[in-house]
Length: 66
Image (cartoon, rainbow, N blue to C red; front, top):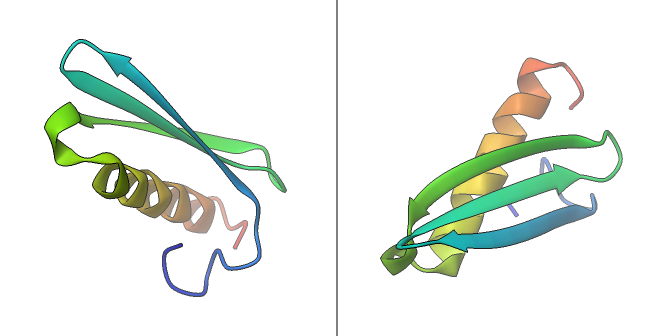
């Protein structure tokens, strides 16, 4: 996870390939907040997952949920 901010929270990650692009959705189970990012399939799952989690962290901070 991204630092200690999301530590202990359940995050659901979903990968959906669309051609040579992968859509990655990340959802925080506690707040039911969901975000999506897209990236090239060549970037690898870990990089795409990290970007989705960072985006989720940003949205949760912006909404004042964390």
